[in-house]
Length: 293
Length: 309
Image (cartoon, rainbow over all chains, first blue to last red; front, side, top):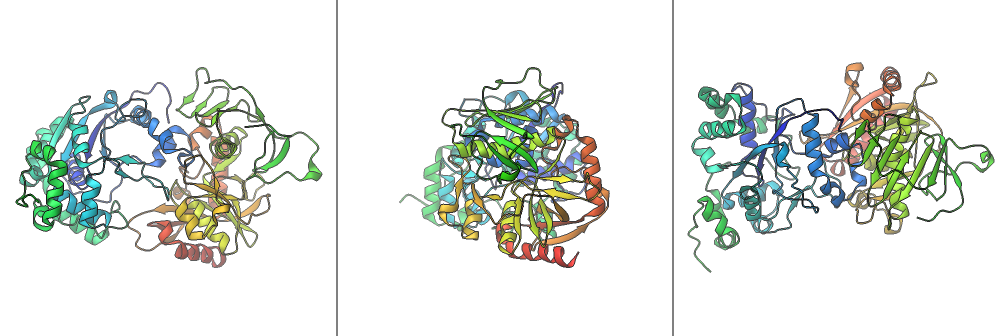
């Protein structure tokens, strides 16, 4: 909802293809902004994905009476409206959309209300395994989806969704769209580097976002410890996780790096490398030993 | 959209005159056909936008003079100059059902605020002569739950929008349409035949489905159910809500609440919601996904309505 005369915030987008470490980074940031204290994975509030309720609150219209193209066309203005209405200076938002433009050519994530984007990337072979469990599909289907330019999340076709529709594109298109968008500063963070040095990667992200805690190494270490994978998984086992898809058995499943090469059959490893080899090489994800068919 | 002869309809308790059919509204009784309507819809030219609006979004503008303009480009513009008139300028190619969809959704909600009524973002069914109101944000399952309750003997009084009236001391609900707007999964669950699935927008999955409707008069409000969605709810859970703190601020309960406040309805809202809080049993019903838990949700509501909480 937009009243004239407000100033507003800048967005810090936490962008990634699904199952790439976005929630992990988000939990570390949540802890860091609280001085490195414990995090509750089910605490609502910061960095959530855009939803219909926000659309209706800011635009005063019933979203389910609108077509998908009508909603898509005003996504940039919705982001501007949220920024204008906010009393914060920095709005962290989780984003699974690729970086895209409306039919009129306007960037959906308007640079003028963006401080920048943290783009989190993970080896697509590991994403394929995790995404399969997340969507409750087999590996072949998750690999197919990751190669599909038309892939979307939360598209209302048979039922309405709480989240707004998020176009993903293929995994490669997703990565390239953000890294080569060229319209706002982008910080690339590799999931594997978060594994190797979570506190260091967190500090790098915090500096990029301009968080005052960025140079407090102890707070970063505490935040990394508070949001370590085993802790997040433990909380989910005890109390559940509000963001877990209904079909998925659990959200925080394994969290390992390198699982894809171990569990995917050679044919699917070859397909991933055929579909995404160029981008994988750019990101340092070397070929498996699946050979060529 | 072609104009036809004028016809009067029952519009949330008011008499509305329209130059085209509105199949989802009850027709105003012929015996009472004489006299002026409360609201008149006309086809005509509207402003493209309001000058110096108090509030503005890509779809809605509210003027400092309490006028409002709703604009859905593919459907048309709806100008509400004074709460008594709606000037409709359909877009070229807009279907009649699309005009009706916007008219009886967003436009109706703002018009009711203009008319100093208290619209709720809620569906409503009538059971044993008393109203059960199902409120919640979009995608919380209001319409499907209402339709499921109709299958269990209730009658539909309103879908997505109804009016709370506490002006006479007791708390009553005034319904709107006898159609529920449902998505394909919901219609499949209800086994709605294809010929009864009426479109709401071109290229949109949601359809309007006629239900067994309650008579269009105020019904005493017996139970308010506030729907919530949580993946943490392994099973649907129903809990009693008590105290003013559990209902104020009534975000998500009052339809387009901030627009209502801009139109000067804060006092009406406060008195209405306070009366509701004091006189009506309120429960929260939290589920994980309504389509997967309809039967237990219906049972919980029926038990709360008939046996108390």
